[in-house]
Image 1 (spheres, rainbow, N blue to C red):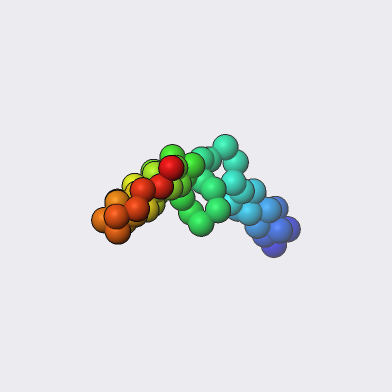
Image 2 (cartoon, rainbow, N blue to C red):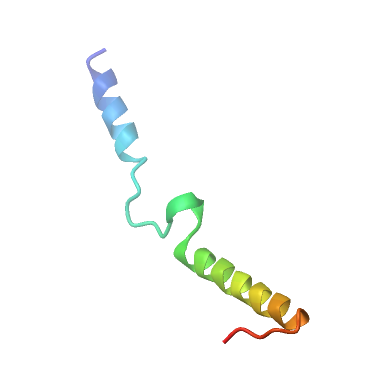
Length: 55
């Protein structure tokens, strides 16, 4: 029974963020950049279809 608290601490230590590439929301930095680029492309396409251009 004395090992239970130690095992709990070891298990919780494995749950840390560590050196992973995850950012907020469960996306990696590269995935977040890709989503930002896609959103920007959609904005440009939408503005061009309305007859206006973003600069």
